[in-house]
Length: 242
Image 1 (spheres, rainbow, N blue to C red):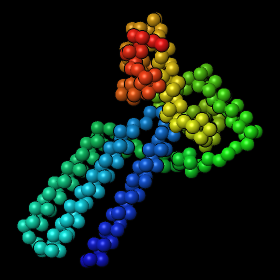
Image 2: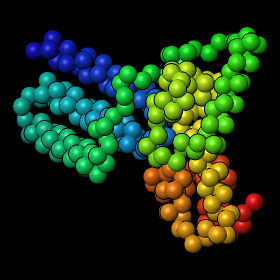
Image 3: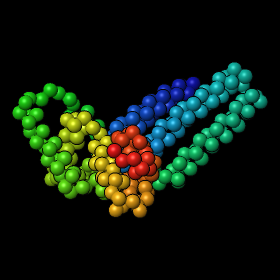
Image 4: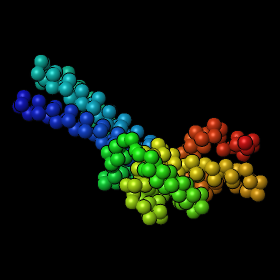
């Protein structure tokens, strides 16, 4: 039995570390390939994983008490506390999942961080010129076609519109432009929102209507991004446009 106890503990530690690595990788891939990533979901999953690890120490304490004192009243109290703690954690997990259905949608497992696909290296002047042309073409396309207005836009969708391999587009944005796809697209959305907020003919539009119009799907993400790029809130910007 002691052998199986040690084996269980070893496997638990391995799975815990693996879980944290997967969550961290998923967050990187999420930012590099999606325009409206809900980071709060990944943060909740991270916290739940940490909480389960903390609760695991109750199991270790139970084993220790059993080994020292045997099957006594102290062990029964620890078992009761252990059960309630795991029940609470599981209910929290289910609540988060039911409240946010996209919780289980996950991230495309075929996608990899750009650092794995195209590790940074010094490029020659010829390649730099070529990349500069591609960057200018991409910027012109974003301004003329406005693909960012689609709230569900992914890097795969944009690559299809550009007729460019997803890998090349991801490398161009994340590596050569040094931006996450998330930030790259949202910059255009914010610029579009600023145009609308400045336009006196569209002053009747509410902030909620504007954020949906420019491609955002939540007020919190729009407000956070807007303040990040402008240093002010959408409401204040409408009152005092720069």
